[in-house]
Amino acid sequence: TSYTSPDGHARTWESAERQTRPKNSLIDGVGIAAILTTPDGPALLLQKQFRPPINAVCIEVPAGLVDEGEDAATCAVRELKEETGYVGEVMKSDLGVGPVMFN
Image 1: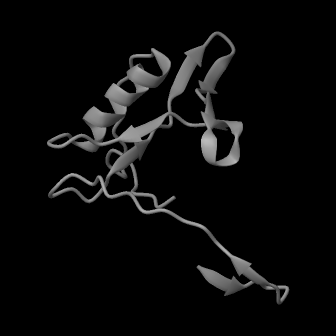
Image 2 (image 1 turned 45 degrees about the vertical axis):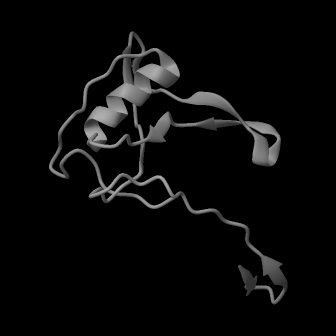
């Protein structure tokens, strides 16, 4: 996408679109806010992951793609274990499982 930045410079923004969204699903992936109970109080679980497009390690929340026939909560618990080894549970709130976000 070509655009003009607020300072008046012509810029190019590179983007990608996933083509893996399961049928009849509003989402294709989950991001997991995993909060650990530690002796020092609550702690947010983050992970290091190498990202080839930037040729660097990123610090990020665990995340993953929803499988066909899987709901977001089941995917989140599965991906948390696959990516970190932690076993979690989905906490419900007034918002439901969690808000839909667009990254």
